[in-house]
Amino acid sequence: MCTGQTDQQAKRIVPNPVCVPDSCATICAATGVDWQKNLFAGDRPVPITDQGTPIAKLFA
Image 1 (cartoon, rainbow, N blue to C red):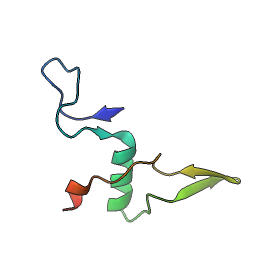
Image 2: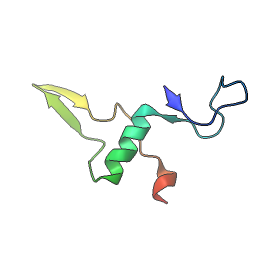
Image 3: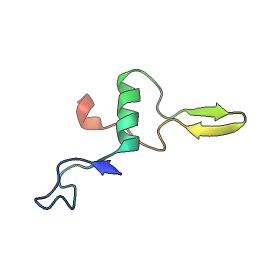
């Protein structure tokens, strides 16, 4: 699911949609957490951000 400004009928995200994994990766990057690491549930790796990437425009 992505968020952002929508068109007039609220059917589509118009400019620069941001998905939840990207939001999570951005928060992690801003707070110094390595967003590319995995947590582990026993031996099973669990990605922190579900393959999200930080929003680069916020760090420029």
